[in-house]
Image 1: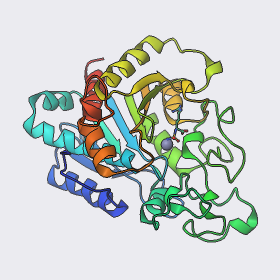
Image 2: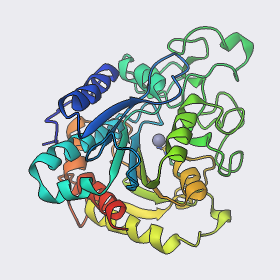
Image 3: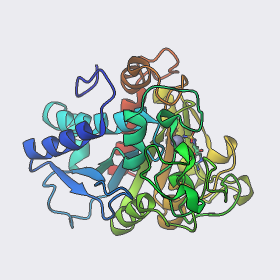
Image 4: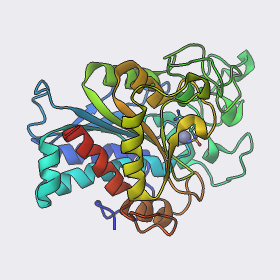
Length: 335
Ligand code: 0X9
Ligand code: ZN
């Protein structure tokens, strides 16, 4: 089973409660924090930092970031992220190898970057038909400003534009912003926004990554069983660090059975998360696309099996994302 023992998709309030509880119960090891920018609808975005003597922030240790749910409907992404937090806390107490790795690193976990979108998707009446009013399948954030005036009124949930309103947070980062694979149209599911970092979701990650020594980063999505590395655009050509990026991507893929490729191999995208973090900081960054059965299929398959490594579709390593994340942690601890 999972490190937390969980057997069903959490709601937003459960993420908030559990992250705070982890910190309250483990005050020297876990610190809960609120990111700089509240969401458009005023929600806090929460994360935890896990490290030995967690408050001693200037200790110079490399920072390993794991985050989920840039895209609202991709519920397994936040589940894998919060389970990783439990993995580190449990492992610190019971597993000498994990204790040693945690001791050499600082681990930041933000399960839900797009809290407004997630809340709407998670609480929607199940529909699953991708229609305009299928809030379960909402992908973007809740920004109204860029839509036509008649669609600017109302809160995100049940707004007159349906789920079409909002910006794709995974097209709003500045790296290659405005290029291929992102849309200038307000109602597109890949709408890039009015400019780089126009959204609180991306500004939160900008502030987090810019202020810390982030050497390793995983941003979690669904679906496709892929480990994607920069660059997102074929025309950019491979960075000098391609052998390093490929080696760790391939190693992690040997644990979870995913396909390890440069992200342009899926399709061209611009303004994405790890393209920005990699090209602006040099830290290693990857997108995981979890499972093959859809954006949020059964919990047992997309979360329990994919995390622990018992997924029917998992490949050679059978260690699941748990083992892949441990490789990432090992790389941060001992580059
Ligand atoms: O299109 C996306 O944002 C990602 N796929 S998803 O189905 N989760 O929406 C893939 C992004 C791939 N490109 C980079 N990560 N650079
Ligand atoms: Zn996604």
